[in-house]
Image (cartoon, rainbow, N blue to C red):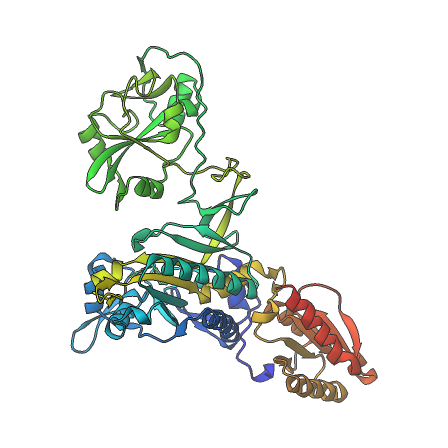
Length: 570
Ligand code: 9G3
């Protein structure tokens, strides 16, 4: 491709509304243009990268035995009403009407559509297991789109759905997809970690998210430095210690604590450590108020609370609810003397002579001992894990990292097949609901994640297998006939050898060409300059290393060696 005719609107300075490096570099390198908030055009340079990522995704999915199809982005509301999600989804689901005023949604995901396809065409267990996938545009009306392609309202996703007659078959496909995802993310050059995740509204139990490690990642990962344990912080289990101090139990007594409300205020007021205070929170679990206890130096993890007590909804009670239910205000509530059901984090069990709210204005209890002064209805692992703790598998200590969620694998169970009546006849001719799995990769998000992990102060540094071109050929002075002739010759030669070449034939100064080449980040740079008359060209690898002078007759071999080096680094 000749740059003089290529749509490549590079920008010199950083657009003000781009906060993260991948967003800045995608705009500056002429890869995309914002059309609306969270809505982008992928310009030719980005399109080439997206195609490379998609072909790696396709290759691994096909090798894993999945079948590609394409489903519509325009979904009739009826399908979403069958699954019950039409009313459940809020503003994130983009809804519209056609000319006959029939209701539609722009597809944010395709469980409903794929289930409607399988239920009509798959009646016998003999056809299963089956894995169907597509690479398709998705629409989700994010309240606050930001960070460019990392959180857009229209994006490209590879979504796959598998169908099974039994749990073993689903487990096998889950592992199959898990491996395919590891292959894909390795081949596109990403550093990633699969983490245990929360299945959220999806129902189902097993879920893993694939996280690309990056400081801008919105998700926090808790991982062990002594094993391959890793979990989304929402789900990271803690290692429950059973050490209990052997100090003798004090008498329970009430003390005046003035307006001290928060754990730190009470700790200061009574000159005690926060870990000696019981933090009491009134929570609504589904339709029941429960008093939840965590140690003062810990934080309640609402996702783990939901899982521990099998609740669908978790909501912190309002101040009014607290007053109504506890007859005391927030900051003075506690477990002693209340009739409200009490759930507690395991760490509460080991506390001796602790402090808690007295359910009385400006008063707290001291010398509080669990089981003597109050009964816990049930214990659970309901707190956030903290850095430096022992890993839940007992190997190594926990560290935090930020991650960009680039993929997720879910075991869906029969939520959609039952609600939408997709069943097969089993070997005894008996109708059974179909077990499903679903597997997503954020293709456009992967492009941004690669830039987050592969850039330097001068611009993008594309890994070879996803790069928009393999070679950036620069004619340093296109007014010089000899240099231009050699550059033109090289351009034709390299293309004939199968390289994808971006040829900078623009009448620009050398400095501009080098700056743009660094910004765009094509892995191999060849420049034809002053030594053209000696048959010498300059070769430079964008990622690192010095510029080398190469004689024309050696250029093919030199390039082949560089490609092997670059591919070896993936
Ligand atoms: C919606 C809207 C947003 C959504 C969903 C539904 C996320 C929704 C979860 C999934 C699960 C998997 C198949 C590919 C892998 C992920 N955001 N999810 O279901 F209506 Cl507006 O999409 N789907």
